Length: 447
Ligand code: HEC
Ligand code: HEC
Image 1 (cartoon, protein in one colour):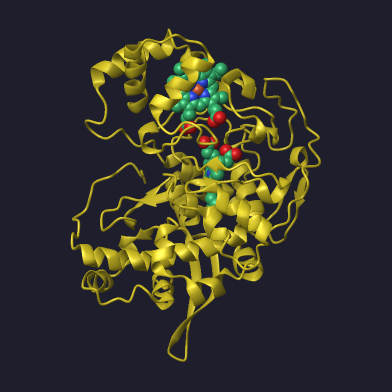
Image 2 (cartoon, rainbow, N blue to C red; image 1 turned 135 degrees about the horizontal axis):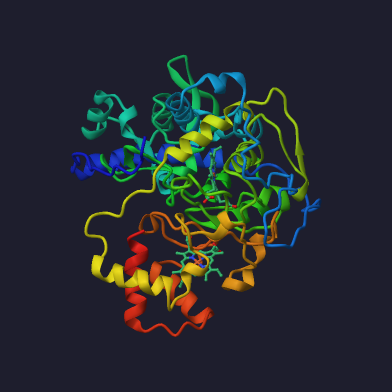
């Protein structure tokens, strides 16, 4: 269940085959891009209704709109109660990877991404948009054909084949054969689109799934911008975000505040999800599935003025299993030899002492959110724009697998770990020596 395994497979090093394969993959990505467009199709709903505008740092049990740690948003129905923990995790994996929650209503119905993909998703383009292919979903003969250059990677029909094989990570479609040609009648997206990548074991962008790892190559904005249903002004915004970023509020508040796609691993025991700690993990999963993916379900939060009701609810009955799966995703261990252990040891002392990091990054998960603390943007020198959502503050990000998911901070304002350290050194006037900074970086790489 852990995505931490990064064992590399045999690499097929024939570059021509790779190019072709990559091209094929590109198609898939384009596909994904199309899907992304759908995601953004809802009109902005003016940021009204922030009626739970608390300013205290404490998490209060009376924050009834989503802000609770008990995961009361989960539907603990009879089916779920009968399941063993393993059954829940396995069911959650299927949901995370393959469940669209009925979001075809957005990606197909509204955005017509199925038409876009079928008509024009060129594999090269798709690849450049960051889509990934699950090599384990490709039958050996397909892998061999790709390797032998027998697969036409400049044809959208190839993309449809990859979708038909259920090999495009986070993209689920229905492909029909109509008079000898493939036709994509429906397409939707899953959580894995943004929160899984692959280990590149077969070729760049093609490998085994790494669930929970953010896909920082994925360009959801550019993907969305390919949809004919998106107006030109909105396309310009989507195209401005870049790879690895997505704004899960833009279609609600009309403000462009792109965020770095975060990992979905290492969250077990962290009491609030998201950069602004709006609620439990299930609160957020529900929010994303309904308001962003376009799933058929219900989501309400008076703080941000959202009251969406769609019955039957295809989201809520799955939240518990989905949460258990995410909790099963362990933080990947740093790669062997990727940091200097002696320096990291010294860096721990700096982290806890001179650099004052542990005043906020404390406890088992390196975050004080579990103690009910959130931070005003001015405390840490962060751009306040995104915090203006439900809580007005930022959660101290739990530090997990840092080396595997640059850039850092919610807006990606620090490209590297040395940039993170420089930010704090200058903003908090820490006066760290060059040696202390280097040691601190080695320590961060070890987390
Ligand atoms: C289009 C890309 C995209 C898709 C699809 C998507 N997410 Fe996310 N996810 C994001 C972004 C961006 C954030 C950061 C939001 C924030 O912190 O406010 C995020 C945040 C999260 C977090 C919080 C991580 C943390 O550190 O607290 C979790 C958990 C999560 N997503 C799970 C899911 C699940 C489960 C699904 C499917 C129901 C999903 N996401 C679908 C982009 C996506
Ligand atoms: C006053 C509380 C506070 C202090 C002190 C603090 N941090 Fe943070 N840290 C935060 C908050 C809040 C965030 C989230 C900011 C954002 O995403 O914009 C954060 C984010 C980070 C991140 C980004 C993680 C990610 O996945 O994007 C890193 C790395 C980090 N801090 C390291 C440090 C280090 C190293 C120090 C000491 C030099 C430190 N922090 C001191 C509160 C603090």
